[in-house]
Image (cartoon, rainbow, N blue to C red):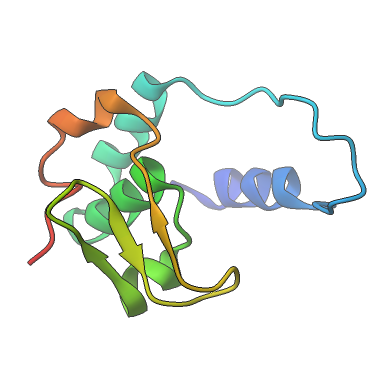
Amino acid sequence: MGPEAVGRLKDLGKGSSPQKNASPRDLPTDQVIVRVIDALPADGQWVAGICATYGTRPHEVLMSADGLANGLIAIGGGKTGPRQGLLLSLGFRSRRAWITFS
């Protein structure tokens, strides 16, 4: 992912607020997400995969996330506080390297 892609991602995230219209956005397909994550360096794929699979923020994964036996993820803290996360995409379930906790 080059500087242009990073700049585009930053622009897409600007202006997020609860007062804005929550209409659907043009989001990438699961296949595109898989290709992007597979193209990352190996040490970044797990974090990006957990974020894509459970909708977590990167700092939550690195600091306070634990996999649960029931397939959920327990997030111990972060911007939105402690919570459990559900799989957002069943298609990612086959990507075991993304959702395996040590």
